[in-house]
Image (tube, rainbow, N blue to C red):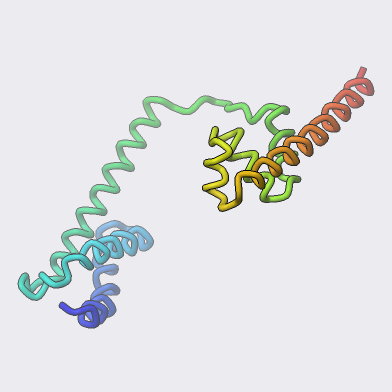
Length: 169
């Protein structure tokens, strides 16, 4: 099957197969997803479809198997959650983490990227340079400026926190 033939087949069969899988799954979005995934898998086999003579049946079978697999995964996940329920209350990030994230958001993007990659992702300066496409010297400067700006912002946050504590007492 040529690419044009496959495109024509897709245009004609997709709505029909989606309707069939919708009847099977009861979820239109899920039906579209599994039919689309089946067509993606069929793309690599498009030359064999003329030999098989039943491309729609092949795609329907693959889509139904995908739907069953998804349903089984969802059922296993539900059983897992029932046996191991999440804790009643999951605490949010502490005040230090919230202050750090707020301070990081105030940095220019290039400085924020350098600081996060180097200090939070544990990449070397050279690796950060490679990831960002910036020279090593530029990365060092961004890290220095970013750390200085974070120190100022986090120091201001600490001072504000201390002032609020004094008011409460």
